[in-house]
Amino acid sequence: MNILKILTPQRKIGNLGERVATRLLRRRGYKILENNYTALDSEIDIIARKRNITAFIEVKTRNVKSLGKAESRPGSSVTPEKQRKIIKVANYYSAHHPSDTRLRLDVIEVYLEGEGKNVKVRDIKHIEGAFNKNTAFDGYHLKKDL
Image (cartoon, rainbow, N blue to C red; front, side, top):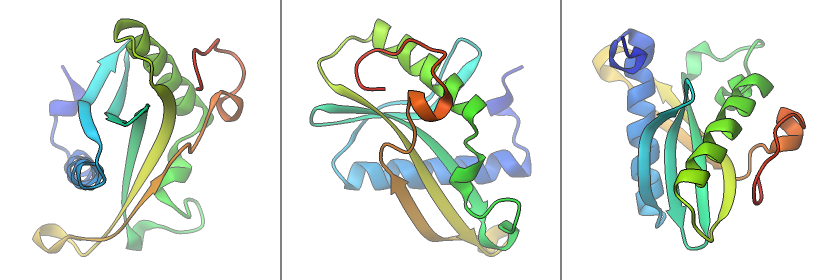
């Protein structure tokens, strides 16, 4: 069973964050190539292109009331293990969709407030080049600029 199809409360919040992130990227001139691209038992939320850059984007969405000492911002949950998985899938994608673009690994943080049907976006931050092979660790041989 595909975990992305099970609509738990967390998945609903994640879906909302990904929709908001997609709209932001389009407004900023990105072309969305893929949403929820899955390969090698891992997933990348958004793959987008703008000019000479293909961005592999992990979207993290949190309600501001849930942020605390354990997690000061949504992007802090993109652990080195998660980074390695994203890098592996990004390499796979770029091998099967060759282009002359530079590759970049981004995080979009979506901050929500309110609950239930009253949830609204408080803030959104696009962190370009949020991580790379050095932050994930040097275990993968990366292509291009990852």
